[in-house]
Image (tube, rainbow, N blue to C red):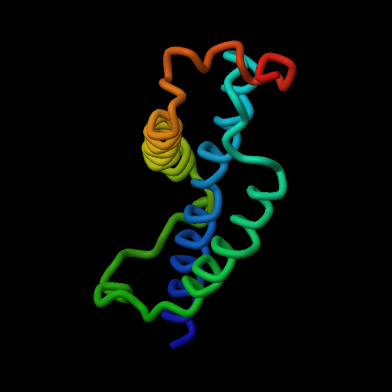
Length: 133
């Protein structure tokens, strides 16, 4: 029973960490676009804080209470040097999921701005407030 609990805790912590770190790319991408392309800032720091504390923490915490997978005791013992955050986890969370979310966010941002009369081709170099005046 103790080995099963240990495996469950390790698996759930990995899921929770992967879920939490994947949101870093879509949250930093708007700031990078603002700095590099001078587009209007899609997310303020307050909005990012609200997203992290208001919507990301509850699902991340709930992953700690997931039930064990059916094959948890059929798996061979993990390597004692296995880490909670491996290179594969980082590549999957940042490279794949994070990039998909960032692209989807930018696509939605451009669609909304276009619907309000600001087509994407006029946004470059308009991120600074004096340009809008």
